[in-house]
Length: 90
Image (cartoon, rainbow, N blue to C red):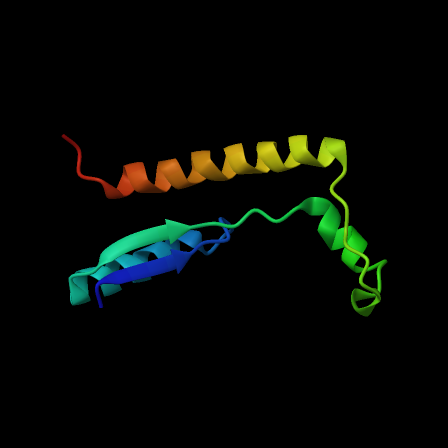
């Protein structure tokens, strides 16, 4: 395997997932990539209120973009912290 991609939810078990991914990357000599996906918050709410077969698309509210940006920043900080812990100290 040339690359291993570990999808992280940045919750309680994240360290276990990262540790296992590192173990696999070391075993196979692979490059490890960590990812986390931010989903639009309103789409969760709208998905429960709209018939998916009706052809109506969910809308993103203006203040939702601020919330998404905040989630992105928090996630990036957490990912940066994980990567900093993995890299050898210089």
